[in-house]
Image 1 (spheres, rainbow, N blue to C red):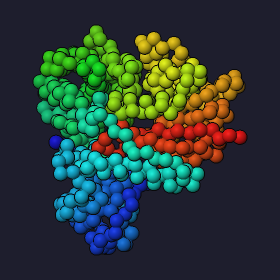
Image 2: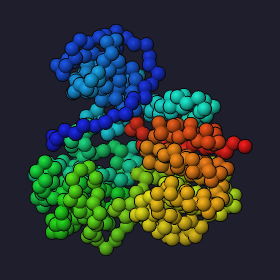
Image 3: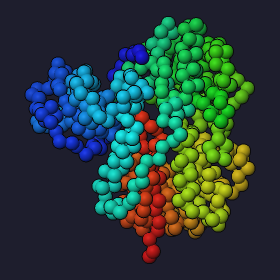
Image 4: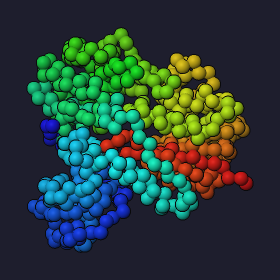
Length: 488
């Protein structure tokens, strides 16, 4: 794995969520005076924060966050930088490995890449840690004390599950880097064989790397703002066993990208769609608003359960099909539909949950602020022959006000908001509609438990939470929560 230094980027970190701490040893508690980058302290790691850093706090109040370290490790830590009372470090030398460590992890470079902070941890311990993180969050709210947090559900594959990769292209055409930014920097780590990616993604990445060299395709430099190729997006359909390749460029340049696309298709016949996406803006947004197809085929088809989905270059779609199936199935199970209910699906995206529920409901109404996602949802309903779903584009709070004014009767409401969770006015408007039950799907234990506490005060009691491991080997966890309206 190679590294290309570009420029530093500051990252804001959220408060850590510690594991229960074992008794601290002398290595953990030893104070360090005047900590600088020249120090190489010996540390016994006591916890893992929500970003995946092995963490320990010394007696003098200094906190050390060590990438690649796990609770129970004793390490010599190289200090990368110091911010206030926190030193961010890497493992300089492993003195004593933690019993949580796997003897044969899928990746030996995870401490450098740090894209999958838990990949060196035994999977049973990963599951325990993720469930523990949710229990720690529910414990902060007295009204959630009776909530049952079930054991984590795992997808079919713990590696090679990721079907979409959005990768940075850096370096020069003679030695291109195709990979991800290391945390808190713009150092690009070249991903040659990533155990998280679907194997077809790795084949495409290698073909693109060779094609850039062969065609002398100019790589974009964000400092000089010169060059052409900025990002590579690869999407795989496990249903079709085919791939889509999107070259994100700084400008329209048909000739170079056309030849690169043809070269990749020759090396990887599974690539059936090649797209040039033009993004001339600065910043960290990957995709621009203009797509130019270099192939006749325009979309992939994926299937989750019995529902088919069309995937276009900028469609949002879950990157783990098996994990998505677990979530959608749990929502359908807990909704308890009989065919007579009206279901409201808020933040519906391209309609995944809505379409899963449609066969058991009288009507499903999906609401989403992103108009392109609503267009995809309507198309997905058509290709599945589903006629009892309708999708509305607009601000969720405003559309809920309209529904209240129309005295819409909702039996079940599904909330699937972005990571920040729901605004309180959205929760109040949902409660005002009076559904008998709520299903809340969340990718953030922090915002989920905060919103469950608010909903409990609005008359909706959470009975159980089902964690789902959508992203094994990483710190992320999805949750499905079941709430019922209390009797007035």
